[in-house]
Image (tube, rainbow, N blue to C red; front, side, top):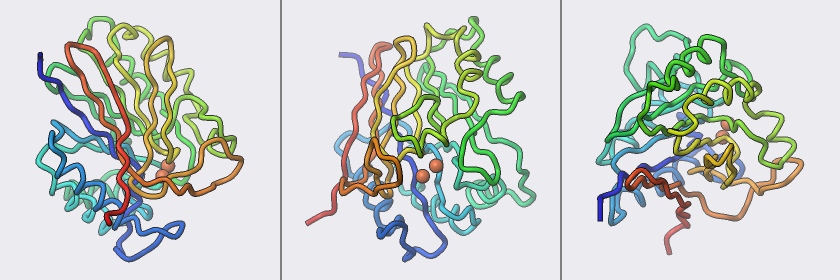
Length: 258
Ligand SMILES: [Fe+2]
Ligand SMILES: [Fe+2]
């Protein structure tokens, strides 16, 4: 059987400068470390990890250094998209070590094992909701020209579809119609669209293409609520496997040990 490319999505780490700081009664540093350890120690390690935003809770440079040192413990490359709790300059300084970081959007696209991975920066400085500005939409259109025939996976923080919780749906990608228009020419080559932000597992589709959300490494939320209700479910991550051009995906829960 052909070997699969294994991608792991982690999301919504919400790390803070103070490792003992809590969010909704839990310690994000502790749960993120637990999830990353589970990935590190799994019997079949990933080829790459994609982190889909809210890497930190406070946007501080020191918090991004924490994210970097945690991710450096993984035996594979890690690439990041940013979320509403992230700060672009903080990320560029703390993750990439840039001395004069800009606040320009941080979109990324690269070839990986025969795939094209596209990471979009849907964050809007100072806002909870997501948006792609006109230059980003143009860039995405270029990536999705019909001539670009490699199988594609698209990652972004904000969901481009409603997930059924009105308070979260107010903070989805506000120009999802432009996003779908931009990727439409590549429809036949897009294997999946992956997001974070909602702190819960989600499975939907657009024109037959899976649109999947993952629970966070921090605090999961209860689906289909009209306000933020922390869930008693454990944190976790999403496994994405591509085998012979076909995608399969599932969530892995990481409960506390003992
Ligand atoms: Fe989050
Ligand atoms: Fe978010």
